[in-house]
Image 1 (cartoon, rainbow, N blue to C red):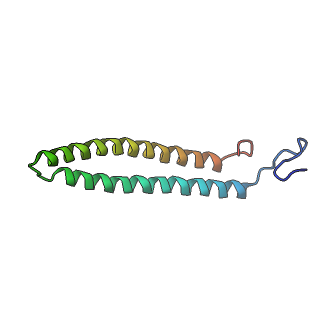
Image 2 (cartoon, rainbow, N blue to C red):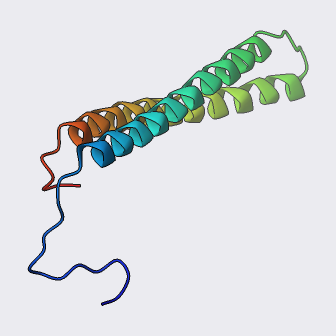
Image 3 (tube, one colour):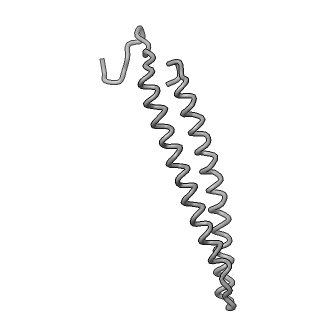
Length: 103
């Protein structure tokens, strides 16, 4: 028998400790994603401060426009990260209540 393969006659058994450990790992991933959201918020705040600078030159105006475009893209990425964190957290709860069929 190869490592990692189980005979068809012996389905995997439910191990509550293993599920709790997996749930904890998935929760940690969700919190790492949430930390990325927090870091993104800090970058967005910095970009907003930069946009408020009053450069009078055409180059300064172009720079602010470029920053605004990047801030907009970063905001969309932030929203995706936030959705991902919520999904991963929900998944961790499903792992915790798994009855052994889905993990």
